[in-house]
Amino acid sequence: MLAYGDLSEIVHQRSRLAICAVLYEFSQADFGTIRDLTGLSDGNLSQHLRLLEDAGLVLIEKGFVRRRPRTTVSLTQKGVAAFEAEIEALRTFIKTIDNTVNSKRSAGNVERASESEQGAQLVDRNRLLYDYDQPQ
Image (cartoon, rainbow, N blue to C red; front, side, top):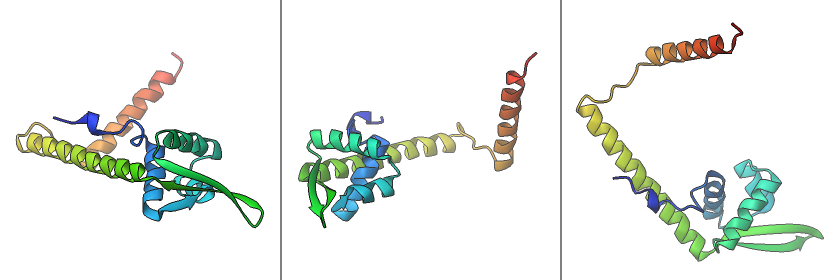
């Protein structure tokens, strides 16, 4: 049985998971580095950082370097624990899915389409969508 409840509502979201991964790897990073590594816009990053800060998972420090403002972010101990728990939950989740797929394959219940079959299915699907969009 899949344990969906083990996945964190806060950390699991794709952007926040990426932020936590950057901070876990580098211990701390400035706003621009996190933005560049995650590909988030300034506004999106700010919103996600605020949510993580409200949950007590990150520490945000604002200061100045050579008279220029600099925002530095780091994971708190609670944030490190939450990130590690999320990674472990994802490992368990994937392992469970792999076991299910493998058992179904060995029982003959799941057949994987060959690349040429997948391509043909995609062409058929696109043709169907194209035909549907054309005026009759």
